[in-house]
Length: 123
Image (cartoon, rainbow, N blue to C red; front, side, top):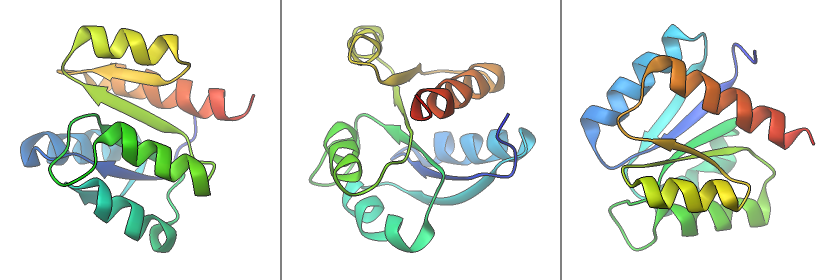
């Protein structure tokens, strides 16, 4: 497990964002920041230097979580766990070699998704 790593949360639902931050801390990670818009995440990621990003697929703002992920992939090599409430979207992301986490999720499911993302980034 990659304990102590900094994880950025990009989630437009404040309750889910806070619950995710608490779950990360419980798992031994640092919640390095919470943003509700993809534009903010793209702008701030270079100053935060997270080890992983937990990204909601649907966000407030001009760009989706998927588009935000593309921007991050273009400039940085950080693993991303995409979070969605839609089973079909999660399945499509998995088919495209992305780590997807279906809402609502448990702390254990979050941990498995983070481990899968870190493992995939080392391949």
